[in-house]
Amino acid sequence: MESVLLFVLGVAVVVVGLALSIGLHEVGHLVPAKAFGVKVTQYMIGFGPTLWSKRRGETEYGVKAIPLGGYISMIGMFPPASVGGAGRNASTGFFNTLVQDARSASADTIGAGEERRAFYRLPVYKRIIIMLGGPVMNLLVAIVLFAILLMGFGTAQASTTVGSVSACVLPATSDRQTCAPGDEEAPGAAAGLQPGDRLVSIDGVAITRWAQSTEVIRESPGTVLRVVVERDGAERTLAITPKLTERHVVDDKGQVKTDAAGDPVTQEVGFVGIGPAGELVQQPATAVLPMVGENIGGVVHLIVNLPQRLVDVANAAFGPGERDPNGPISVVGVGRVAGEIASIDTIPVASKVASMLGLLASLNIALFVFNLVPLLPLDGGHVAGALWEGIRRAFARLFRRREPGPVDTAKLMPLTFAVVIVLGGMSLLLIYADIVKPISLFG
Image (cartoon, rainbow, N blue to C red; front, top):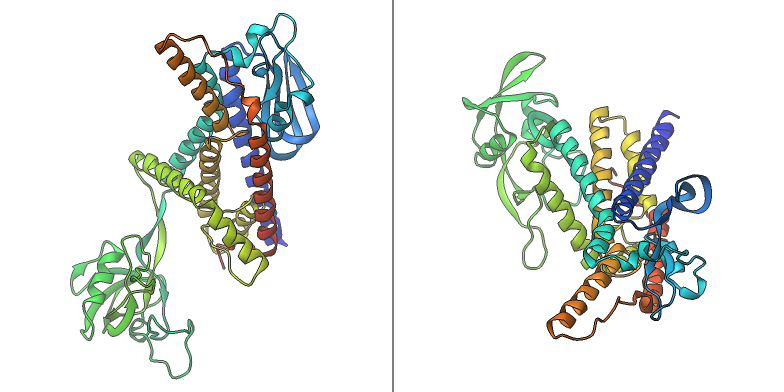
């Protein structure tokens, strides 16, 4: 019962965190819009029926039933179809932008005397600032969360404490992961090493990093090593002889190297059969931005390869294949991962909190990158339209031609509908996959 409650708590934390991230995203649009004099009629978190709202001045602030997005509504976001026509009311939100972009369905127009407060009348740079305000807010939130995570909690690193001891010797190419009767006992277990032992020295050399012990063991097959460990506050000396066995070759990040054919690379090295316990090590402020950059790069890579990733998700959802844990995931999947993190009783609370912070920071990076895609109805599409208008006007001034006027982005409605259909289909596929074939990061 307790694990179920913790699972629900983890899901709730992500839902609230996502809602706050969306709310701050819209604040990023709202603040510069008001500063530049644009009339903002609504600021809403969520879609669907309104659960609560309150009007302050000319803006209605509220919360809607489906917390999967948000929007602000600005008057005159799109220019009139013809000179002297009336601008239409539109929004920065996902579905609201799509609906209100269609001039025939637009319900609100610019009121009398409000023409100069229309969004499309702003200089190009001001429109870009407004539309970039949302994604930039998510980037700032991610930076703050990563700073708290890295500088306050730290990152998981291998300690000099033994975390696991193998019972037997299994080569890297073995199909089995568990010991069977008759298997040779691993040198570490035979020498009496136990989980919780802290490595003090090997053959008189002090061990300050786990990598030191790994290097010595791999280079000493058949050699008796005098290993000093600390157990229960007292030091003990153990004699351990690493066994020559086949192990995978790993890179600096701990990933198994593969050859040209994609097969894992192995080599014969000394083996004892121990693994390190992890510990959180606080990082300096200089580590924050590289972490943010690494996450941005990961999201960009995912988006660039999204078609193939979605094919892989579909094959897994409707076939026997397994989901890629590094592949795309829906809000449902994120909630499930958060629930798993919260319900695991083998990790300390601090590690759970750190994992939640990392999850929310990554979500904000995803919101930042995804909203910059230069397609309507995303923020990047509006930015692209404003940039194109600026380029047209610059060329008109350069060649002394007539002022071209604002770019009529309403003409992109067919493309916008196509984008919405694709995004909707993608969302449904990921949600379905996260229900029938969920990604489980913890087995």
